[in-house]
Length: 221
Length: 219
Image (tube, rainbow over all chains, first blue to last red; front, top):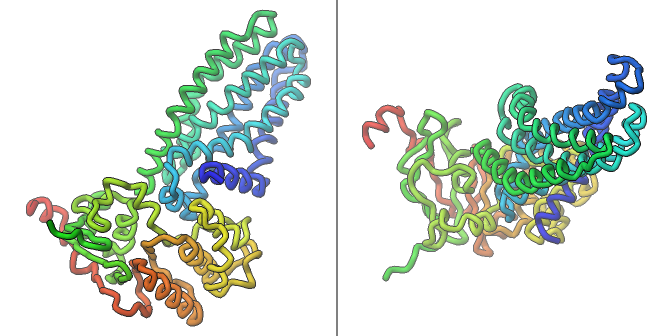
């Protein structure tokens, strides 16, 4: 099997075996969304209007929560040294690790989002746009986050630093993703927003692994 | 035209960690089948030199050559000939011993050698035990088994004997002898006596740099 695919499968298996890593972000996603109606009040029209934004903000923060440990353990146990010496370009190894991370944390969000939409009374026509926006948007979050996690590696209180560094970069994703869902809810086409998200994903797939690999090499020096 | 020098050669190497020069003007040469034993007090740069040889740290000055070809020109080829053992064992607690070894040697297509290597390190009975149940010495032996199974020609071992009992050290010495008989190179940093016949000693204390400022003025 191709070494890059091997790294992907190994990391995915590790994520699935360390089930706390898997459960915590998705539980956070659910609870954060459920807290909103308790704070805002149970008025259906208001909730249904706020639903896309609330779901997306919760998705964003839960991705953020899981990213903290993307490289931290590998850094501490020496695995990153071996990864840097593996017969695979570190850029591709980063892409494989991030992809595994997305499958373990992004895909559960995709599955849970419609249920939370139902709970918040999300407009019936918006579900397709919500899922598509998450499908295109959450990999962007993982890739940008991987870069942030690599940059903050070895820093004390890296988690807080990571949030400060990465959350501003998530802003465009949040804007276009919620616009897509909002447009669908008003009966307009969500496609302009989704296509912009798609182009962002294409750019980030091409650039983020290089930035992450460069930051990792620096951290290993 | 002269023949290129066979083996692994470092010339005029210097290493700088943040603001401190760790060592400078360091030369070494290890022929195929040879061994180099790094000694020196704590902080003299044994680990830094090994990481530098592996390409994890860029040398501040100097160059590394393999069979006469600069390592810097083809880092991918250099990575393929290295098996590196650092201070940490890089074991995942949820994976078994054999899975931990396979995870890395599988990347170079040698997953089938994992079990034999673990057996050679005296862990034949423990291969299916998750790494979180292994003792410190057993963890070290799993990491050594990864090096043995890698099939790499250049072994860079940082304190390979830490936590090992006498029988395990003998098994390690045996593995090192087999590797060298096949033309492999061993470079090890250690404080403990380890039997490496014909190994060249390299005392890092000789290359210590007294002060950063003097070094700059000299340059």
